[in-house]
Length: 338
Image (cartoon, rainbow, N blue to C red; front, side, top):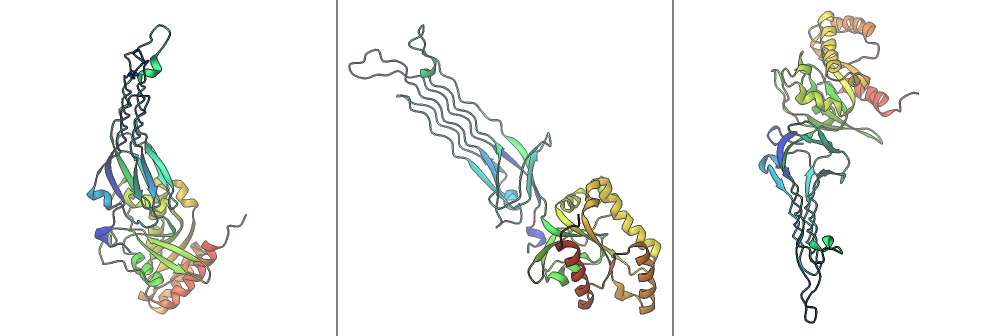
C-alpha cells in the first residue's frame, strides 16, 4: 500500500524519439575498378518511444525525478551500401491503467491496462536515402543523398486511473477510509477534516473463491465536476472502477439532509460523465451506531422507502460489515441479468 507521499497519479514529462540517420554519398573505390558506381547506404531509423504496463508498479513517482526521455538517433549510412544502425527505442514503464496525452493539444496518445501491454507514443524518424537510390541512365554518379527525418520532442501527460472492482465514493467524512481499512485490513490515514484522504487507497476483500479490489476514492463536494475542491483529480478514478459503493453518513438523523447528500454526489457524477450512473452500485448508510436504537429503526424504515436495496452499517462494527460483504458478493460478483 503506497503512502501519501509516495503516490503520484499524474505527471508531465518530455519525450523525443530519435532522429533518422543521414543517407551517405559514396562511390565504389576498389583496385581494378577505377570508375565504380554509387554505393552510399541509407541512414538508420531513429528509436521509438513506447509506454509499457508493469504490474510491479503502482505510481508514476519515478517520472517526477526524471522528466526528460530521449531515444537514440539512427546512425548515418556508410560506403559499400551499408545502412546505418537503428536507434535504440525507449520503453517507459508505467502502472496498468495509465493514459498518455499531448500536453498542449490534449490529444490522446495511448493507454495500457494489462501487464506488458505496450503502445507507441512517438515514432522515430525515418533514415535518409543513400546516393545509390539516385543513379539513373542520365546520372551515373549522383552526388545526392537525403537527410534523416528529424523528430520534434513534445511534452506529454501521463495519467494513472486506479483500476478497481469497486470504488467507494461519497462526501468527505462519510467514513470511506474507515470502511476500507476495516473490511480489507488496508491502512489509510483518516481524520476529521474535509478531504480526509488525499490519495486513493486500495484494499482487497476476500471471498471463498473470488476477490474484490476496493478503492477509497477521496471525498467529493458540490461543484467537483467543475473542478472545485479535488474535483477532476479524483472523478477520473471513478471512471475506472467497475462498480460503486455510495457511502452516506446517516448520523445526522435528518432524512432530508441524508437524501440531499446522496443526490449531491449523483449530480456531480452525471455532470462529469452521465455513463457513470450506469455502473452497478450499492447504497450504504454508515455510522448508524451513533444513533439510539429507536432512532436507527425509524430512520431505516424511512430510508428503505426511498432506497429499497440500501444497506445499513457501522464501519467500526464487524457484524454489520459481514452483512455488507454478503450484499457486495450478491451485487458485484454475480453476472448481470439479461
